[in-house]
Image 1 (cartoon, rainbow, N blue to C red):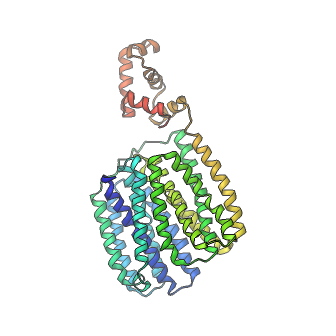
Image 2 (tube, rainbow, N blue to C red; image 1 turned 120 degrees about the vertical axis):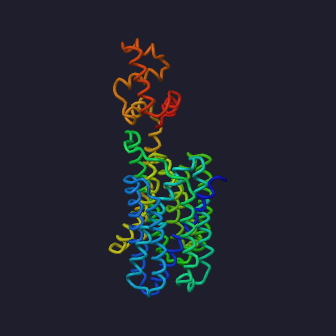
Image 3 (cartoon, rainbow, N blue to C red; image 1 turned 90 degrees about the vertical axis):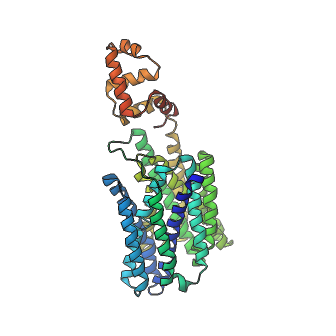
Length: 436
């Protein structure tokens, strides 16, 4: 953890910047427009802009790889837009600035950059607590700043906090390590495709449960300030607990994350009985923090090294779901009964998809071997030779078995190791672990 302080700080700064922007923009817009218009900007347009920013990062990373300069340009533009936002009278231009900031700032393009940088440079065993400390610190600082009077938060005075945060962000990405170089021809194996699509389906369903749960909480109209105040403390604590289990025992963490989204089912009963609704609303943030860590680490670990551009894809899915549901809620008001039925159905789907995703880990060595050969584009002859290598055949034994010269075998072996960029021991380890 001690070597990851700069990534913790990067996440904390990004989260704080994003969270303060949401809080400030909401107050500014509410001073001019009604709740419906403000909600549309914050919950719909900002959510879609954030998802679009993540997709933009993925596209540019795959095309040109060196996205650091682009991000720095975006950060400089963000400084200018923040200044304009607070010096003009609130109007439709303010809304557009809010949306653009979500796209190019720490919420969209920026969060994809941060997550990908972490995937590229931080070991899997440390990502859970590192992410938890970063986001937890950002959440706690948001709570502290939310205690400042609204007159400060919604005025140009907030630039005294926002602009230094952006400058610190620029400094941190300059001192951090570079991204791992992407392999242009690195294609997903059959097993990887199954895991990716299953994970996308799981995160989609979990996002729906999380969003419906938030809608259910909103029905009871608890104090809106809790969204940026006390709930942030519960959120920070939940992140730390989830991060600890993620690094300590991944299976326990996965089960805890799935179980945490059973909490909305409990709220159905507790809300109906009018039992301490504010406490329940805050606990909702504690349990959702497990999902936040899970959706992030799942794609970080699946992406690892060569596909790091996918690191923020879980968050992208979540923002699309949140924006879509908020949009639909404008036309079809979500009732308590509707949300209850949806949550029950979605929880059943979530458990089913997770069981299938978990079962993909129990493949036999032959399936993994076949996927390995596909991934590294081994020819039929190379495939036969690699199979014999893994059975500890010598070059002479392989030559006799395949009725070829020993020089031919040596050439094939050298070609295999070059294609895979690893030796026999490493290939054996991968096959034995039944994962690629």
